[in-house]
Length: 212
Image (cartoon, rainbow, N blue to C red; front, side, top):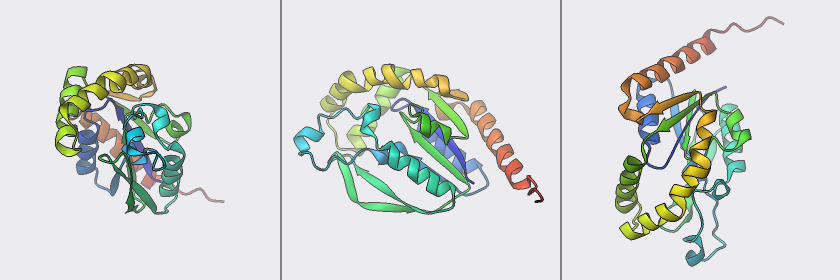
């Protein structure tokens, strides 16, 4: 069975940076699974309607498919991970083939809100970064990488990102095993997490097989 680590936090908190730092430090095969890849397709809706959807609400995600894929990977089966097209607000026709690995890093804003999803996580990390820093990072990312205008990013932040963070993401912090302030900037906190993961992997590989 793979070791499954959940990395949660608000938009722009530094979840991906933390996940990448872990992959570089863990001496085994890792894969990063982004919750964003599992936004619902909504291809049946016209673009004018898709842009109005609340993408920061738990209902925006296809958690059933995400859970199924995590279970398949955990049992040694490959998956076809969706690719989400942010410019069209729907899934791409292409997928990514993901092979089974020793460590699965699941990162996303709302991965702690689903009880069934939480049960699949061996370690739950909440990346806790102040709101101003998260907003600045989101503006830079969405404008540069996702083709959004500054006005649309700010409007979305005020209408859905901020209220959904306060309603769902911040309260989910209580489910975390470890709270990591400032994400990848917190070198000591990262070292503790990486040491914990290395120990867990060592214990798993050295656990004797019971004699029947």
